[in-house]
Length: 197
Image (cartoon, rainbow, N blue to C red; front, side, top):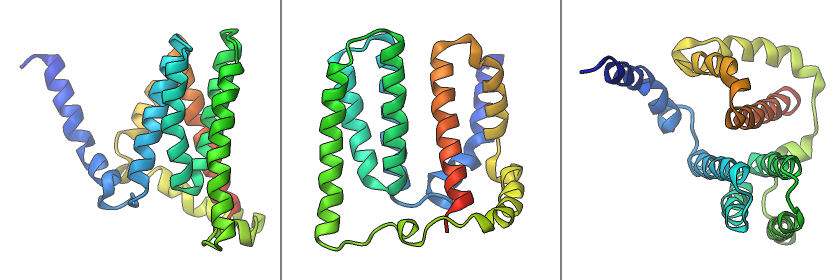
């Protein structure tokens, strides 16, 4: 086997435990898997939009991101992060953003109608919205979360890939877009973990 293939299969073997863990064995809830699928597809469409901001690409992007926003509460946050990313790309490319706002408005109407439906029929709401933000817990949460971040048996190759990606981030437009999305999602999750029950 060539060196390239040997390294590839070694990588697959090394990352297998991490894939099994995050694929549902320990860490992933049932709604996380479809949420990850929709976010992945939305991100692929963002890369397509950065090449060609066609109505087809923007429609497909919205067809993936809208269901993600309805699956879980963090899906709504990811909806706004990814929509903001597309908006920035369109502004940077000096594209006509009227079509974008038409699709964004359609998505907001769909999402809002779901939230109005939940309110109208007294469906369970996010407990975070009911209990509020708890800043006094930040030191305890940091003390708990930092050892988790550096637990190599849990995260395996993720941090290695992350730091390698950082060195390559400025060389490629797509890598910069993905880096922005990942950073925004990381900061959103971190702020949620630090400030909510």
